[in-house]
Amino acid sequence: MRDKRPNILFITTDQQRGDCLGVMGRKVRTPHLDLLAQDGVLFRGCITPNLVCQPTRASILTGLLPRTHGVCDNGIDLPEEPASRGFAAELTRAGYDTALIGKAHFATAHTFAPTGSPECRSSMQLYGPNWTGPYKGFQRVELMVEGHNTFPPMVPPSGQSYEAWYHADGRGGWKDALHGRNGGPDVKGAPQTWHSALPPAWHNSTWVGDRSVAFLNERRDRPFCLWASIPDPHHPFDCPMPWSLLHRPEEVDLPRHRSLDLDRRPWWHRASLEGVPNLADKTLRDFRAKHSRTPVLSDEQLAEVIANYYGMISLADHNIGRILIELHRLGLEENTLVVVSSDHGDWLGDHGLLLKGPMAYEGLLRVVCLMRGPGLPKGRVCDEPVSSLDFGATFLEMAGVARPDHWHGRSLLDVARGEAQRDFAYSEWDLSDSRCGVPLELRTVRTARDKLTLEAITGAAEMYDLVADPEEMVNLAEDPAHAARRRALEAMIAARPDDARAERLPAVGMA
Image (cartoon, rainbow, N blue to C red):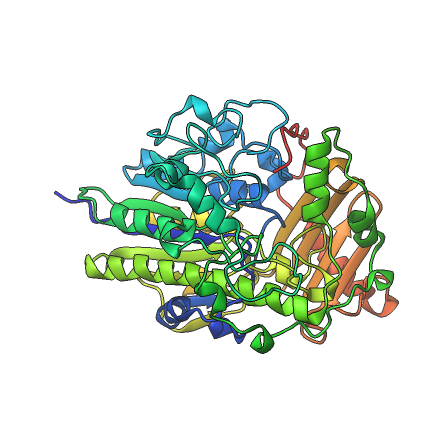
């Protein structure tokens, strides 16, 4: 007899801002995600528990905040113990078929020495092209390593499932050359930006769509939990043609305030942008500098970046649509919880900044969050401050599995139904001097109206009224007129559960 418990389909993109949906008002084409919002719940106030990839992905999996699971920055691998008690492991033990397809990033790719991880560029050869897990609680994985083509592409036996498929026809070098070639209009010198000539059929977003559709078509007697992890719109901004041409640069929406304004910001903004990463390896140091610094962009160049970024989102949306259409075709839609989100956003020109770093502006902190499933309302817009930390607990409640007592994350199903409220959501990031030349301990709390980021070592802070000042121009942290608001937000930070300082896990690499 078939187990009729609800299925779980979790789809993520990488580095997609929370406002970069058509339904949110930006000029980006996301018809499938907009339809999902119409058919389910749109969370407009969802934030990430950390501002970069690895800590956030570890928090989503484990239900724990970064300083508790230990992955408090990129370059730190998620230990097996918290992973063995994460949502994938809990659902596996409860009888679910669990799988992850795409980018995992629970471990570091660019390591100082081999780590033995299947995601480590110096160790993945140990696993072979047919390895499919288990991994971090998932019974089965079909991985790609990074997916961003930021270093020379991997050739088997390096890589995992995507790389093996990509090179299987013997034409991998030819495809690489197409990917690296600007096949479209001049991008006006925009950094890390080009119209890739790689046909979309070989693109990793398409591969995640293909493999996810194949997974849905497998015959099974048990419910499934699938994490489909698309690695775009992460930089480099290398959207393939013709998707890169979908949005005209002269028509995209530029941020209103797009100049560096470091003099009005707390000290760590300038220090993190101008500091020198403390890395012994010159190659890694140069990589960190290239991808951490903020280039000075003309409006014309920024428009090229945004148009390409939008194209990457639209290609991801297309493949998300393929997965959702197949779910419907197979008659699985009514009994499946669908959640779509991202690990973090991108400044995308806000305040003269690009990519990501230790400045918790809304474009980076806030992420996409869409939810549709059994018992959930249609067309509901929720502005409650919630976190992607809560997804694992949401999955367990939908599956009828008890949430582990030690988790920080709480189910969002009651919030989605309008039966409960959240006062605030919390994010944290501890950076060593290897990240930006100065150690930082950042604590951010966001309510429906206010946001405070406190640098715990020095006590410096920034606070913004997100209703009166949505573009975060006026720092109220030191304004005596708002001292009571700051104290209330600081109390929320202090309310973090089990806040004993854990021993920092060592960095094994840089990303």
